[in-house]
Image (cartoon, rainbow, N blue to C red; front, side):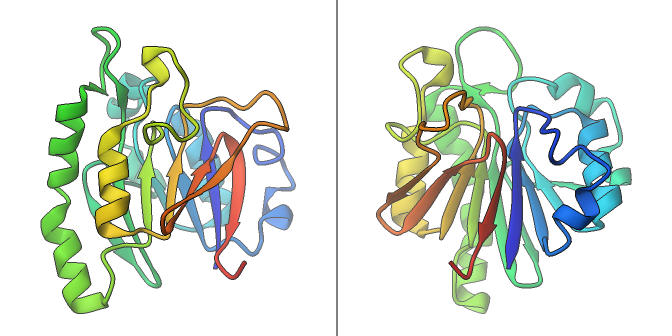
Length: 205
């Protein structure tokens, strides 16, 4: 299975006439936030694959004012979604740093994570695993995050990974301007992946 992960930056390799040829073998798309609706619409229209997304801390008002479901985008913020071969849970937003929308304190993010527990337990009982991917906007605390409050990671995500053991945690929010910057980190049983711009996960690797 191949998953196209996107976040925060409109990538010209994705937003191009060659998208169908370049990503012909993609099975799913994950958007980790801060991308405009027309970009998501372009990707879904061309690849004709399910796109799961969470809101970041930008573009939120624009997205909520549009009927994004019409373009085939599936919002998984504080929800669990199961498709054939893939179970995705989502926790959008960033650490609270001002009065903007879709920002959370650490305690509030724990509460959002707790909302997922009934569905995760159902999956464990009937599908033999809690989930495959936790899709977030912000990173986990101490993994890929930055020292300024806006870009702090959440401890709640560390607890989630330790408890429910997703194979992947895919996040955005942390921009990568240097090719040497770390994009992928193993933490316990989970691969933490920064989806900035775009990244392709091959689950067979």
